[in-house]
Length: 126
Image 1: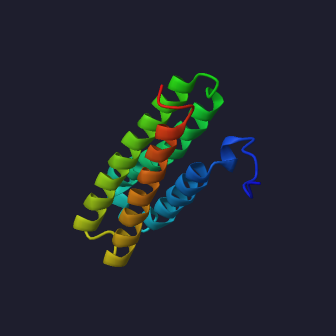
Image 2: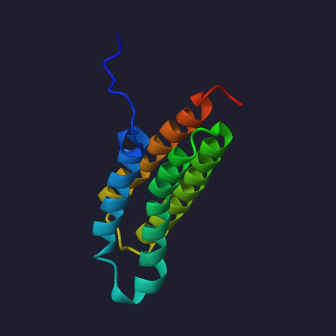
């Protein structure tokens, strides 16, 4: 018998929960970025981090078509890698402290592995 609760909505997916949590972490950390970055780095890192969760949610809505769901998971991974790039810029511009950078980068690496695993196991490898 499985101790997992059934997945009824995208908010039940662990990858969604993690991506939402990380996007919120990015939001609060980026509130400290300089005002001159508002329409560049701040906007970009917020958009890409939110896109991870949004693509998972959109894919979930199309899950009856396995390839559609998997395509959205790949799009989510693309946004994840973009977010990691913006995290690197944030560190190099000295907007993120080393500890925040390391934590975020590692958490995004971990999330990427989980999204990829979901992609691999979703309704076989079709």
